[in-house]
Length: 116
Image (spheres, rainbow, N blue to C red):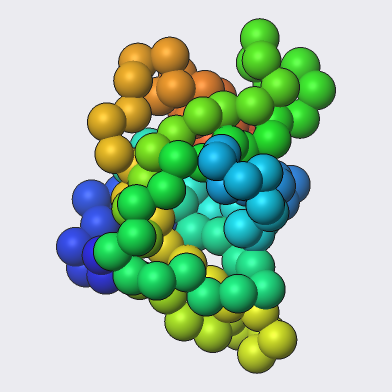
């Protein structure tokens, strides 16, 4: 999904939340920006485009009733980050349930950078 295809602008987060593969527990990267529909993470390895992942996003204390947010997302694009030692990956959420959508909105409201 390109910027021109995205319905909402991603908002950078003031905390980079850890994102884990739900099946293996492996860290895939850190969540750096977010919308109600998709997210971008930065990590040490590229993730294949088209790959579907069950993810766990580790939440800061007090952000929700749980300490993790479980989501399913599809990798829409991948490449090198601005920092060439890191890979950037764009994920589109798949079937975000209402409870998860509420947590995503709370993350945007409470952790989203509100600068210009």
